Amino acid sequence: MAAAVKGAQASDSPKQLSGLQLYSRFAFAGAVCCSVTHGAFTPVDVVKTRIQLDPVTYNTGMFGGFRKVVATEGAGALLTGFGPTAAGYFLQGAFKFGGYEFFKQQSINVVGYENARQNRTAVYLVSSAMAEFFADIALCPLEATRIRLVSEPTFASGLLSGFGKIVRQEGVGALYSGFGPILFKQVPYTMAKFVVYEKVAEAAYKNFFDKSTLSDAGQTGVNLGSGLIAGFAAAIVSQPADTMLSKINKTKAAPGEGTVSRLVKIGGELGLRGSYAGIGTRLVMVGGLTAGQFAIYGDIKKALGATGGVEIAK
Image 1: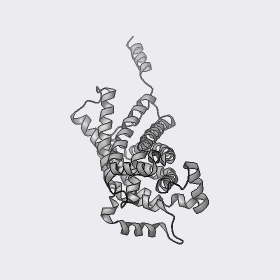
Image 2: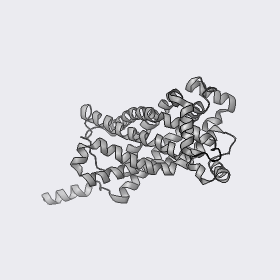
Image 3: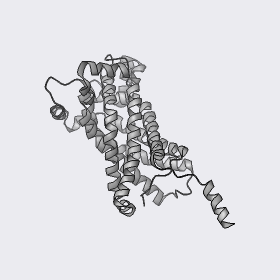
Image 4: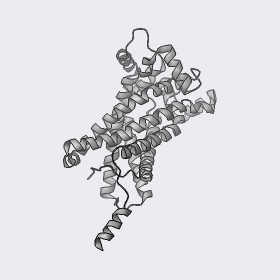
């Protein structure tokens, strides 16, 4: 009788996923959360990019930048680059979140669960850095197209035409001219994003909430709050590289000019203060979208039954 009850309980419990079934769900959840949030923040990104590329003209802050763009180009200009943004971050989100979960599990397999648990910060850092490297290979061409469309509104009418025009006029290599800066920006950004999120969420559950009894809405709230703090940290860490990325993708390189020499030249022209142009706008943007990402990611994982991941937080 006891065995029958135990068997019935086991049959009623949700099936633990693993392998491709599990990581494909992580990737899909990451793709959706990144595409939705980055797409929603396209107007803020347009203003942020304009401030970085032309701080003399756009010198009245985020709200003044919004007014200036609408007054000179119309409200539709705030959605410039929406196509490459949504497509690029769909791909990037799949590799970033799916890759993070995958490399975290591989790290646990290599060093063992207890060692990973005791050194979880290092596991978070290594896993997020590896995931972001592969994510940036997918993102870079679409980010180059987005920045060109935002900086030169008459360059092309959208994603496909802009992408094709860059390839025809400058070659495939031009799509990856910003790969160095995007790594310099995105890898520290993602490392800070995941580590701070994991640490803040861990502290919240350790000191304030019991995760086992907390409602779904409460867990979403923890994800939002942890994501907001993680976004602020990630924005500050990656801001100089974000400004350089905008600059290097604005125009094509001079004949014989390499990426490294361009970066050195841009860095010298910007200086520390110039590197943080648009930081206020970017804090709003990155804090908001990171909070949204972790909230959406957590909810989609639950909806898809992606509960097979290993947790190493104390």
